[in-house]
Image (cartoon, rainbow, N blue to C red):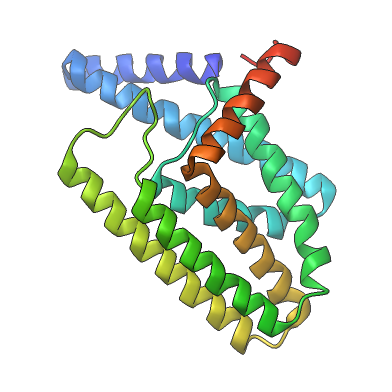
Length: 217
């Protein structure tokens, strides 16, 4: 993410000079700009690949579900930006590819039962591990941790109710069921990223990518 980081530094430097911002605030602005630019690059790449494969609605549904949850609950990260992009791209494309296949074969009861089961797992994992720290930026403020955990609980319950209503009341099965499966996949992927097993697996994948794809900085 060297280009994005350089751009963020230049923009932060320009703003600090124009607005007379101190170095600490400029560093905060730079970090925020890095996140924004990085998210734009990642979203653009995932969208382009999903458009090429013809699975855009399912990929974006999975990505939106997991990304909002991740903002609240945290989770494991790869050690470099491009490895995170590669892993995220692989996971969302896999979910997006499977969603229409599974959605065409699952019935309403099984899908609602799967959502209920996912909500129970999500609530347990949030109680046990959320917010899951990024080792580089741990959350040390206990009040902030409590707030993020409560928001994570709220998200899990809201997501579960909304998805159940979509499945139950939308009779366009060929549309709603694959989207529900995609959202379920994105949700469970994020839940898994909170767990110790998820941390170990992602760290293993991260190390493997670094060994065999050293051009991913």
